[in-house]
Length: 387
Ligand SMILES: [Zn+2]
Image (cartoon, rainbow, N blue to C red; front, top):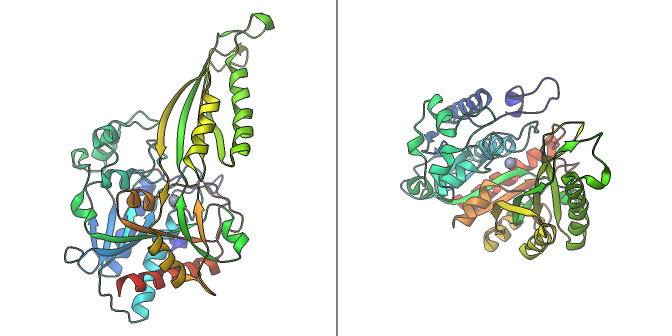
């Protein structure tokens, strides 16, 4: 199945994937999901927010055991982040049928829309709308790089923007959710296990720093006459790195906008975005506070820690472990499973080993043997939960 998807949205120059939500590539992937569901005789449900659900059994009779992930990508992303979870969901369902398993509860496969937020800047858009944590009025007004709003884009895809919003009917069908995902670090490499279980998603946030100065000529303005905001920005980048080490967290300035952005001018304004994450909220907050002193800073997003359901995660670790329980480890990356968990849905995640830990890059990788072990583990988990 991953081979079938390999050509969709692939940049021929870099081999990276560009699968923005509602782009032609994304529509093709949605089409593929529908075909895979039909091939297995599953009932397809395209919900109000554009999330796709394929059901084996009737979830209106009893809430189901749901697995799945997303098919969109970051720009220049890898082949596994998202698709591995969707493909493994279909493959695990096939394994259950090969085993002759007759589920006592309905089993569902989900594909959440716009998980990465590559186009409109808000990650986990589909699950945030579904659970009501994202205001639909804010969502439909978000603009992409071309200046189109989400409302424009949805209309063009033949959908009704007014349908967006919290969807209790769809949510009530989800009894428990298990998302399989390629690991985005080297935690499993260190433990030597091909599959692990998530303990928590680190609290994380995004802040915009505006460093103001005075734009002026790079040749004629004497050093002592300058008010150069690039220097304050440079200091902040170094401070972030130093403070992150001191607090035992991660902090990144990965996006910067310089105005007027001329090679021969002292800038007048530097805006930079800080992403900071760590195991404990207090450490993340302390770093942001230290860096904020004397600066104009606005918090653009904040996601509190997600602690996955402990009995569920321990039960799954026992079921999917090869010799003894599978490793249980936290992640610094956000996921739809985390959004559902925060909304009160019993949720868990399985990670498949990533030999280099690299993700959000064309060189993201998982070995075929490990992917196959992930499918077996997911099938075992579904069998445990749906029997
Ligand atoms: Zn993902």
